[in-house]
Length: 155
Image (cartoon, rainbow, N blue to C red; front, side):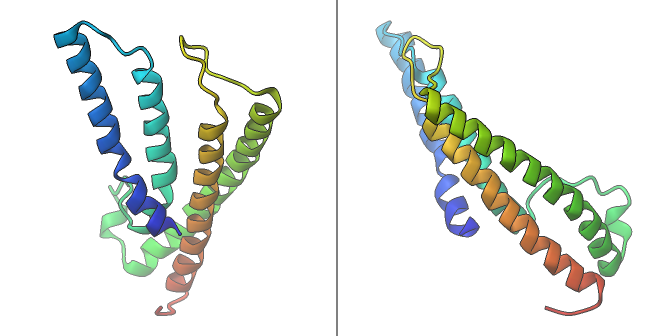
């Protein structure tokens, strides 16, 4: 699920770049600014990093402070990863509870952006909740893989 979502989501950056480029050309050459481009770009960027988090974790492409980590054995790295995964899973559970609450509030109230064009916030809140959920699933899978490695089990 994370692989498919990540592969689709990674193309949103090109949509956002195209939108911002079109806006810049429109404003500079034709003197017709597009007021809602920044809001739409923010939505696209939010979807990009929220939905791409699980895929990034799956591909082991996230940033890591490896001052000591790189010199450890595979088993030592796995033990450290198990420990950090516990904290990550706790954080993601709390974040998911908040995301669900925020999404429910947005749906009940019909919350919109406070911009010139009031866009509904429901789609981005739903994507936020989905992204946190997918990352939680990936963190849980990674936890069990690292736990097996720490115990010396080859997968």
